[in-house]
Image (cartoon, rainbow, N blue to C red; front, top):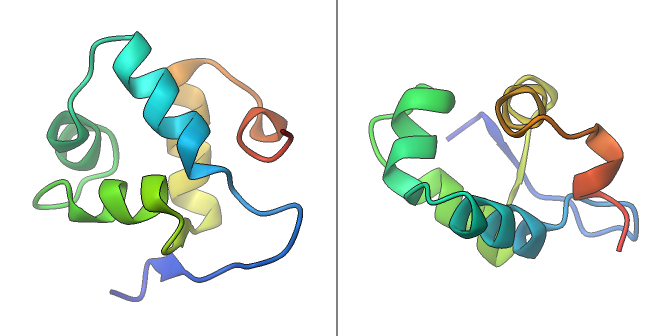
Length: 77
């Protein structure tokens, strides 16, 4: 999956924040994966949330726009 980027530095995407926000707003990982990011399913969203991969810039932008948050929201503890 070339749209997934593995990032292990301190300013990396915080997947736990995505999971918490998604659940708080009542969205399934499948909905986010398919309707927001354009994937066939939810596996990429689970990878993001579990910290296995971080979204590329385009997908991070889609997540920020969908949830109405800044890029910093997903990067700052």
